[in-house]
Image (tube, rainbow, N blue to C red; front, side):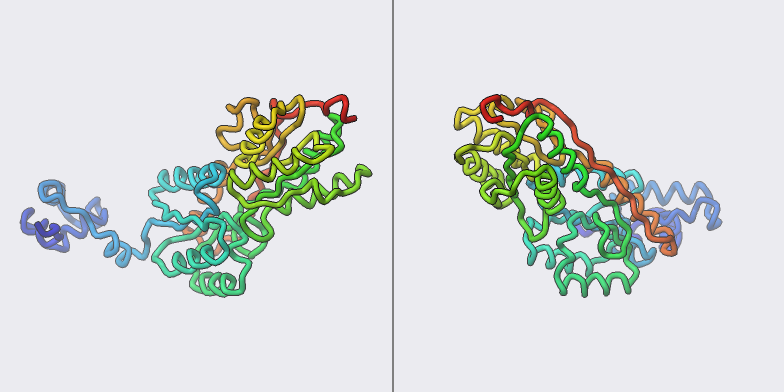
Amino acid sequence: MNRPTQVDVAKRAGVSRATVSYVLNGLADGRIPISAETRQRVLDAIDELGYEPDARAQALSSGSTNTIGLIIPDLRNPHFCEYATGVDEAARAAGYHILLSSSTLNDDFAVDIFKDLARRRIDGLIITSSFILESAEALAILARIRQRGLPIVEMGEVYDVDTVYTDYRQATKDVVAYLLSLGHRRIGFVYGVGAHGLGLDRLEPYHESLSAAGISAEPDLVVECGPSMEDGYHAALKLFKLSPRPTAIIVINDLLAISTIRAAADLGLHVPNDVSVVSYDDIPMAGYLVPRLTTVTKDAYTAGKKAFEILLARIQNSALPLQAIHIPAKLIIRESTGPAPVNSI
């Protein structure tokens, strides 16, 4: 069967096609002189035929698609799914849908996704990975988008667009200070990143804090690896096999912290009696691990909601001044950290 059209609805209801259009577009509620009886006939015909409006045609006529684009770095990491959930719930509450893409932490693929979304008929775009915009090609695309007037929200403070941002620098200084207060002096770092520049808001203050405490940097204590849990597992094994091994490990995110705790267990080490583990993001499972994970949160769910809210404000009023919402990061102390082993002090 062919898909029913507005013409079919008009024939069934005994009205003109224009009347069907008026009803569908909400113009029959006092704005266009159509009787309640006629409006009901149109609605009944729509139900009987199973007519569904063509979203593309509606977008062309209204100038709005009620759809926004969302780019996150990695669907495999629950932290970024929390961002997406916050955006999605706020969008649905406002009558919008999201077109979700993941860059899979790949620079080239990220630019391709950005380019593709920039060509689509969407009402706005949220980018949760500022590294997407680092290349010259991506910046050229961004310039064209801004010239076109497409509202954009970015999770950072770099590109002169509306932003929701959090910086882990101060929180990392708090992490190192906390570990030092527990007597730890050999503090390792699992630096698992998938793109250039990610995680520097953790790695740099780690070095700075140790230096400020008079602890010399040891290159072997920082193990760079990829972003997968397997990568994190093998990075942690390298740290645990050092002699002397670190008594505490800072991990770039909770996902890799899970791998780190697994690696410790496989070597017969107890967390936190033998080694403390602290990480970032506070993903939902962090509070349910054994032991519960000490971590730093920046509340990705709230950040996602706020990102949509300022995007919607920009959609509704393009003349607004630039919006910048800061969501502070904070250390949550749980069970995976404790005093340094006595024989290590």
